[in-house]
Picture 1: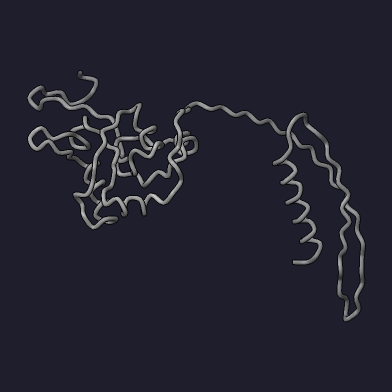
Picture 2: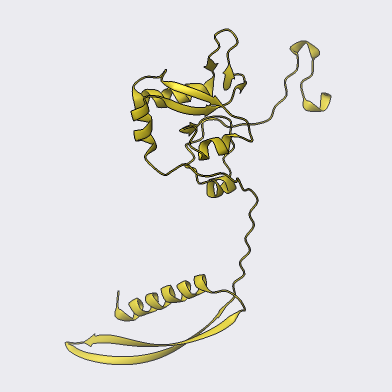
Amino acid sequence: MNKKNIVVVLFLLLAMALVACGGGEPEVVTEFVEVTRIVEVQGDTVTETVTETVTETVVETVTETVTEQVAVEFAGGGDTLSLVQNRGVLNCGGNANVPGFGYLDPDTGAFSGFDIDFCKAVAAAVLGDAEAIEVTPTTGQSRFPTLQSGEVDVLIRNTTWTSSRDTALGFDFAPVTFYDGQGMMVRKASGITSISEL
């Protein structure tokens, strides 16, 4: 890359930085840039000075909207992995009311379901014991404050991952484990085959 290109690239980076920091009324910025170009001609060196004028209009409008706020104190920063290993138990925030995912089994009195199995998998990986879990049932309203306060180490329950939650709550969302959708079920004997027949 020749020196002229380097100077132009640096100028563009400077211009982008100025645009990113700008605010208020639109403003016209005029910059004078001196560019030195070195050209080699059959062993002789010729130096040529070129002056370029660049005029740029910068317009910036910043609008910020906060749609979700949760007022709780965050647990102290610390190493969650070390805390769990020292305690010997994984405190898992779950759901007690969604059969198949997280529910209190009436026959055994133990938490069961898909989400609980993920808690057990984490406990097995971290502690070497899949049964070393304590499940704290949470609701849609209590799940985030329970995790933020440090009452649970991990939240594994039905929770939709949105961009506002990803940025506003301060959590590290794990990979998606379930995709939700809508559907209808009817008794086979009803003969209904489409939603328009309901």
